[in-house]
Image 1 (cartoon, rainbow, N blue to C red):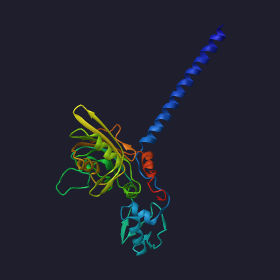
Image 2 (image 1 turned 120 degrees about the horizontal axis):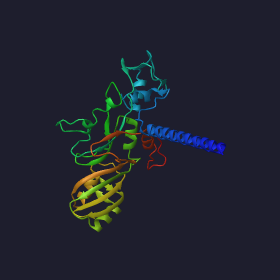
Image 3 (image 1 turned 180 degrees about the vertical axis):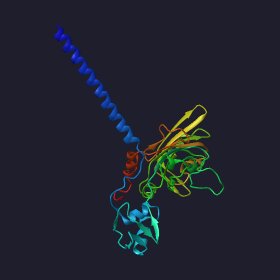
Image 4 (image 1 turned 120 degrees about the vertical axis):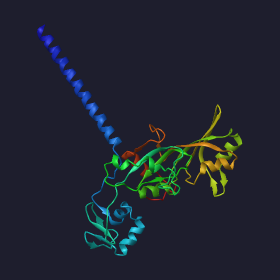
Length: 297
């Protein structure tokens, strides 16, 4: 009898130890996943870079312009003039252009839930507030000794709120801005009056504005008490396109909020808040497929 009691106590102790170990393991796994997911998106610096890409990452010029600088013989790597565009450089190499040391900036990707009355520009000659005023402490959060030159991607006008991407990645910006890729965007517009069914059909079938035809992916309307709310999805990147579309049909957009930009949304971001993108979010942006099948990244 006593032996059986001891055996039960031993088994119970082992089970308890096993459960605690399992919980610790599960917690470590969850913590690891959270760390990986929330890790700020800084470039994983590769061992080698093509010289033109190195110069582009430094914010000096586009790759095409960098090629011209290299061919002109004004670029030196570790004291030697390099004229080959395919020349490989490493982080730690001394690269000079016209005698000035060039260093690549750390890539930064910021997602903001833009508030009203902020401009999506890097500065304003009239001294009005810009979205960069909201994120001015981001270098401190990354422990950077300098301030990378970031800028908004895909402008929102002063009165429009919602999802806004801010970065210093010129290559990704060019990709997202290229018409061939037609990045998908979704908006919620509040109108000054009910949207008529015939106008909904006009929008669905495509309308022509002063700068050409506009085709939406979808439009859905619902009248909420005193508010007349329309959701719109489209790929166009033309300036003020949603406002102009409704103005063309005789409506005034009283409020406009961007809900989604290229798969990025403002979940868990209050108005005026921002965060760094996780690595998997940046990778997702690079994987966006363009409209043209033969277009290559």
